[in-house]
Length: 364
Image 1 (tube, rainbow, N blue to C red):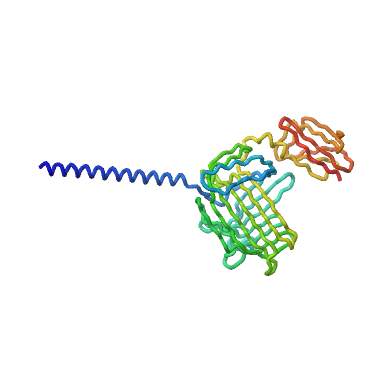
Image 2 (spheres, one colour; image 1 turned 180 degrees about the vertical axis):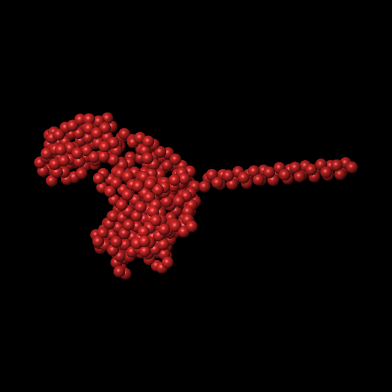
């Protein structure tokens, strides 16, 4: 009797322990799935919101964007605003569909810097989330990824969303290009990686957020007929906020290096954009947004992408003699000053409570 009672008690105890262990396992599994769900760092889409406006900026310093990885801390500051760019996603025209086969979404942009506005288009093919670039058309540059057959020359990024540590290399990128008066064909690779995540700090724009970084490297050889004449490499870093459903980048940089000695081309340019609008411009860089349209005629045109108030303006010749003075001026976009100057070089100084800046004036 005691034996059966003891056995039954042990059996009940065993089932209790087994159920407890099962509950713990299920709870642990649930916690793991929850953790994995919240810890995924990904780029949800290649396409931003229609009407998205970014700020074009420059920086006198070289940014160290690092090699990527987990739990990064990227802090970029010292930017000078140049203008704005507006992005819209549109359907291709009949002519564009013919020129860039397979295109179903066109990313159109309009950039304004000072009084100059330029436009451009990136042609893309989106097949069930897999995005490929079919062409690029901007001022002085046209690239058509039309090499091979059936779209095999398209530059394929991957199937979105791209989750860290995603990587994809398209080794079949090819097509034709027109750059100024130069034209030919190209072939090479596009490597796309989600190469890191962490915290992005943009103190000039009062922004701090958790982001995931998308990196692309397009590397091609340029040909004239069958002969290689140069190389082109374009490296892009774009930072996306993990919980932002707009898919608008918070910061993006693009470095282009083109070397074609026979054509006299040796280009190394970097463009940068801030995708988050400032709460308040950093006062230390406000005056750095000023630029002067040279050469001048009968009017001096002072331009700024940031509103500047209470500005004192002084113009001097190269010997320091004062030619013109004005106080408490407002510069909202463009301010014209009617000044009669002899042919030569002058200096204009603009100052207010934020500091001062001096620019060169050339009278032709």
